[in-house]
View 1 (cartoon, helix red, strand yellow):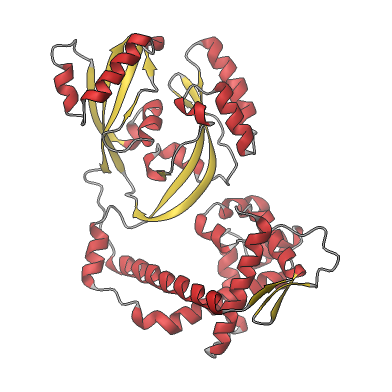
View 2: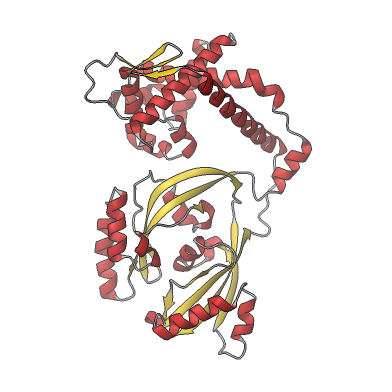
Length: 412
């Protein structure tokens, strides 16, 4: 139960960034030997080993040893700056910080420490980590709190943006297994179970090239960065539980089974509205993915610029050749939603077919916007606090970079 709670907690990007660390140096002969010096303050192999074990527990991305050392070097600089400013962290502040940290995993401090101990992380190592974070927050407040003033106009601009929550974007690989006949569905189910157990990027890429029906199979299933809000809500929820390299359980969509592998996840400065509606058009071309059908799709793509241009193309054609829909994202059919997630406004996908492959779907995203009537009353105090925290984070990052540039750092 403890490990399960910690695993869920580790999926949050902000927490993963707080736990950057590295794997143990199993070949070290003396764990208390120095591995680096920061302005003559030593970092030992033992400290790197302890931070490494945290990373192993939380599956943090990046090269483990490099990230561990970077994190510890930054903490040395942060603590030195706190001493220079006369800032001392009180024991009760450290205890409060440890309790808050453990609470993010829905655990008490005692249970959190037990979970860490099971992975070889000592309580004192965790305490030191928290103490450094508390000290640095006090440094930032002392130096910059007076400069992080937010005007009413800035609050107004933030409220006018689409939502007030920080955006998240993801880098994914995909495999779409065809399941448009009973035999194909049975094969897809067996194959999907095997793919869901994959834990490496190369293995997933090989499976995509061998089995996926999506055009992305030619590049190992790779999809470009996309806002998490573009994805169907049910799929987005599954993606957010993954660590890099992990694969979703099979997701049933019309005539197919989809699987996604997370390559990377990051917060962005762009905000994401909580509820989206999607405006899209589907133009149906006879012949499916035959040479004639693909040629007609290519002709359409060359002739139109926006969804409205499709009305002229459809004039005089049978009713139902063109369908245009504006619906909440959660109501878009699964296969269509997954294709729309990859598109920007007025981009086209020809990956889908209907009627057993006899009809090519020329799918075009017209617009993606906050759903009408979904705007909630905004707490201006909350928005102001978010803006202040963003500004302080920017100041803190710049100050740490300056400390790093002026430091004497040597590696053993």
